[in-house]
Length: 98
Image (cartoon, rainbow, N blue to C red; front, side, top):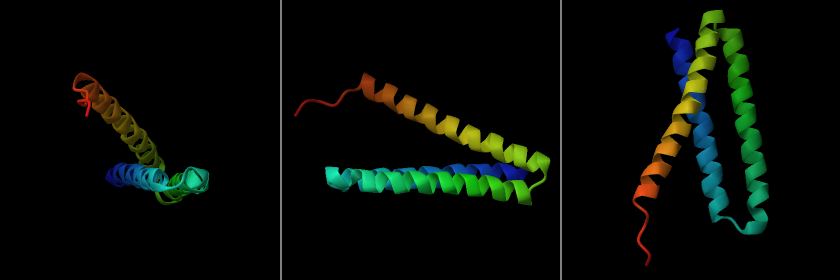
């Protein structure tokens, strides 16, 4: 159970790291190069998640795999809620005009 939970959290964190690295790289790139950065980054995220879920299905038992999927989904939910909370805080305290 604990291994499944930790695996789901780690899988979610790895996916988030790939997303942030891809987004940071795309922000610094020329507009014509953005799609060459975003598409491989998205493909890497998809392959990572699918490989993690397949590996979890083979390594863990049924309950462990269920916990992996649940904790992965909760990791996504937590990042979405954290993003919404950050948007709420920024909307209350907008940046001053320069």
